[in-house]
Image (cartoon, rainbow, N blue to C red; front, side):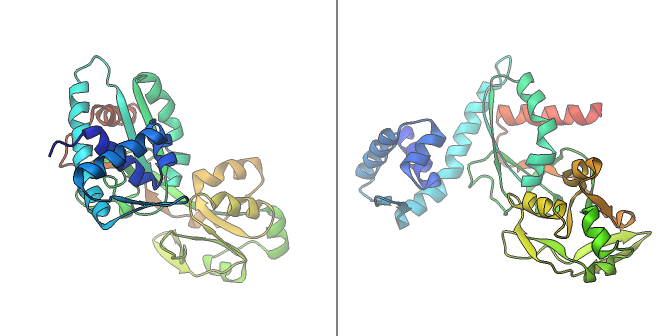
Length: 303
């Protein structure tokens, strides 16, 4: 069966975006063009791949099976073309990264602008989310996560600061009103602003460490936010005097330096290792990704 590669790409774009308009927006094609390509593919295969309504596009069982096998295969084709592209004087093409929200906020701002300046032919797309992600199934070239959340069988390259800290802070007005904790267990008598992972689990217990002593406490409080996009709401609430927030030190540092927040239990703040760029070792490394890997390694050597 002679199936057009462009029609397959159109199907994948629509299936991943769960719609023709979003698929067109993400792929740069027209919605009508994608619709015609999918219709042509279904006619050639003699199978319905998508159930369409005026409000949604849903994969059929056949569509699910095709997408599951096509995604990695098309990624390999793109990788092979990118390797050929690597013979140019300067690598060009697309690079898609799936990263944690904290990496997008705290790590990439110092890397992306100089990288894009060094490689003007590369188009970088960054998707930020907190949930576990199969980077290949998501159509991405690589991911950035912390060590405990890396996918198995991946090559990992350090990126960004190698040591970070979790910090706790509150407004001076809150601490004047409720008192300043001197030991992590004092937090049990305070209003603490908690987070929730995409899995549904809370960010408790809170863990602290000092001189080899590790203390875990299960605080409670009036506000729970989804990790990632809603984390700034917890920071704003802490600034407004609602309670104590626990987050990456680099996230809270501007507010601490400005005086909007006051450090809480700073001698107990716990260190943890920095994030990693990770990618599958079983596939050809696309030229844009190779350029990005080399760039962050060179940046680490200079720091």
